[in-house]
Length: 111
Image 1 (cartoon, helix red, strand yellow):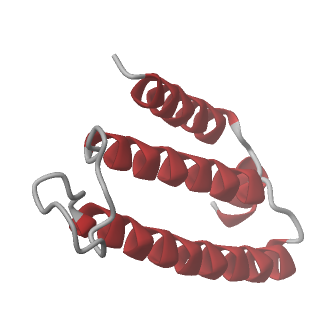
Image 2 (cartoon, rainbow, N blue to C red; image 1 turned 45 degrees about the vertical axis):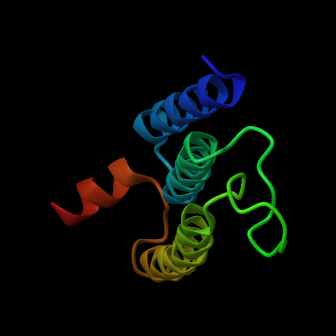
Image 3 (cartoon, rainbow, N blue to C red; image 1 turned 180 degrees about the vertical axis):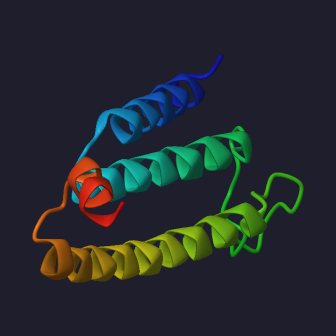
């Protein structure tokens, strides 16, 4: 198995572990970002081509890399950043309302 695939799977596992063990909302958002980055790395490592050249190069067309996965991953990164910014904004609102960022304390106060 390729080194990038192994590292991205380990990073997804690390993000899942952090998400499951974290009691803080901010740490949970960071773990989600780590998992997203690992999934982007995994997807791009599957789309990699040996000795591939850039799709803007006017030379040999048989060895060009497909630009679609790269464009999809750029879109994924942008959407993930926007979602993280929204989640951080919501966590600020939660902090102002409950005066804590601990999941368990929020559930106790709410329920």
